[in-house]
Image (cartoon, rainbow, N blue to C red; front, side):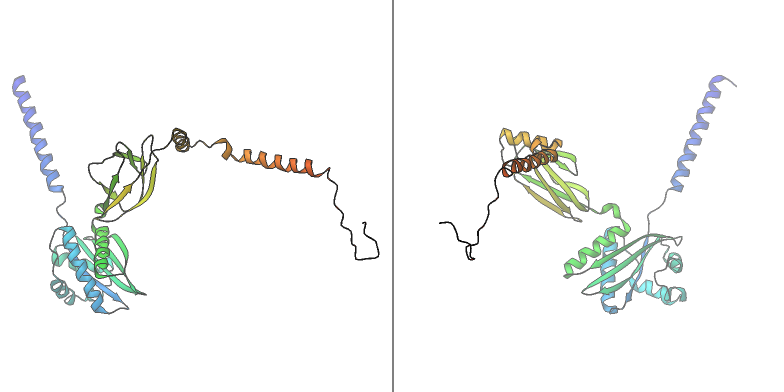
Length: 295
């Protein structure tokens, strides 16, 4: 066999191996996850309230996942036909019949209890192999709009926690100031738009520019919300600017150091003793007795 033919054969062999590898990786790639909502069990509260919360949860699951979940009637039909599901209380081990009935890869179940004027919702996400993947507990209270918002956050936290983000919009009257969030610079004013994809919670916002007072504030970030922060900075004198730079650098002024004040206190005590010792004590004379008072 010639060298050229051998080379061609080697190239073809490598190409075939690469094609087989691509086919194998495509076959091994996981498909889209399919979800089923089993039910929410009432814990000491009216079933009608739980049914309403379950309907909200079903709607939010479909919205977040972008897929239609099996209807409640179909899930109830399967549960009634299976004694294992009838007595199931959100335990991962007893949810397997739903996996087979709906060819699902994820099962959502849980319970709802009452606590004073609020509701406590416990949710579980179970895989097709019966393993518990995640659990979420949420306290719901307030108006219907607030209940929907809390159900939405709990749903995202359960099935897509990476989507739990919000944004902060900085409104400043000083251009060219550096904006930092949690110590990380994100740009200069005016920013082109809100700073998005921030995790939920409280973030430290700082805005600084030489010649102006600094701004620092703790700002809450909420799910699918943009928190506006109005920043107002005033021009400062050179002395105030130097003091601000020292403060940022962690330099403590001499007059603010503890040993200086200790020395001042010790000196004041010593001075008081030096002045007070030579002075004679005053005596008080009682003129109400037999002793005559000097005229």
